[in-house]
Structure formats: structure tokens, C-alpha cells
Amino acid sequence: MREKLILIILLLILGFITPGQGHAQTYELGAFVGGANYIGDVGDTQFIAPAGPTFGGIAKWNRSNRHAFRLTYLVGQIIADDLDSKDTRRLQRGYSFENTLSEVSLGVEYTFWEFDLHEGAPAFAPYMYTGFTYTWYDALRKTGTLFEPVGRETTYAIPMVLGLKKTLGTKYLIGVEVGARYSFTDAIDGSANVGNSAVNNVPFGDTSNNDWYVFTGVTITYAFGRKPCYCNF
Image 1 (cartoon, helix red, strand yellow):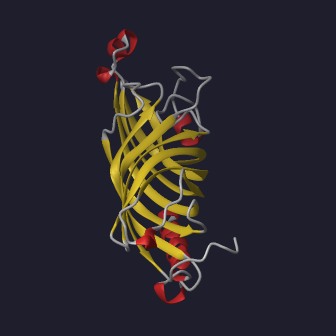
Image 2 (cartoon, one colour):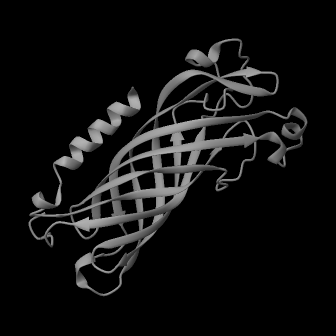
């Protein structure tokens, strides 16, 4: 039900920025495809180690040639196994789990130097993104060394994204980005007693640190609307 509601909200927002209404600014619509990993109390602790697929949609409202308001909806699968770790204690313990994360994120994308899609010449620029993220995930119950989903839980997260984007003509852009999310929960891996995951679970790991998850991938967007005028902003 929550996924359907998010999809409806995105469609309503995009309905207000159709090409016929882009008279003052440039908009972008596109897709994100990549992989996901998490950093927590189970499995490997590498910062970038995509193990499960991630996909979703992205919308931008370019308010200047240096910054844009950005909305994304992403779904990613996390796969973690202690046998992939270099930590002797985790190798001996042998826990493993899978979890599906969905998020809606709204914030600001900042480009490090001026980036004008309408100049006609090829352009590229590094960028960063941050904002506010709402995340929902499977609540996990521990059974032996495995974990099973027993419902859904929600949390908030802070995204910290770095990327590089490049124009493809005057209508398309391609980007590569790595985005870490600091979540406000320690239960993505079932290591903390939160909501449905509290059933028969004994907390383990470092209870003082919350879970992180990382989405790494490629974005392809289509730009439309009249050539923007940034002089009044």
C-alpha cells in the first residue's frame, strides 16, 4: 500500500512539470540502475561493495546552473553474509541475511562548477547531493544463523551522494554516483529489537552504531522545457 501511495505522489508531482508547462526552467526525468550494499553488524564492512540490484526513478528541477532540487524513488536489495567478511569473529559466527529497502528522497543537488546543458558543447561536472530520506525495509527475525522477514518497518536517513554527470547532446545526461545513507535505525540487519523484529530476537553487534546503506549506480535523464533563465534567482 505504501509503495502505491509513493507512486501516486510521484505521478502527481511529475504531472505538474510536463513538457508543455516547462516555460521558465529546465526539468529532468530519468532512471537509476545500480547495486546496493550495507555497512553494519553482519557481513563485509567495505564501503562500496554492491551485492544486490537497485533501480528507480529520478526527477530534477534545475534552479540554476549550479544547483537543482531533486526527488528520487529507489528500491534496492541488500545481501550480507559473514563468510564474506575478513573479521575472524564474523567468519566463525556465520550470520547472513537479505533485505529489501525502498526510499523516497528529496533534497538539493549541487554542481561544483557551472553546468549548462544548452551550450551545445559536451559538458561534464562533479556533483554532490543531500537532503531528507524516508526508508522502509523488512523487519527481520533471527532463526539460528539466518533471518526471516516478519513485517515492514520504517526509518529516516541522511543521504550523502557524490557523482559525475555528462551531457549527451542537448537533451540527455548520464551520471555515475555513489551514495551512502546514514539511517536512524540499527535494525536493518535484525541486530536490534525494533517493532516486528523484536520477536524472539537477542540484540547483537555494536548497539551504539546505526546501520548505513549504499546505492551505487548510473543515472540517465531526459531534459525538457524552455532554455532556463537563471538571472532572477
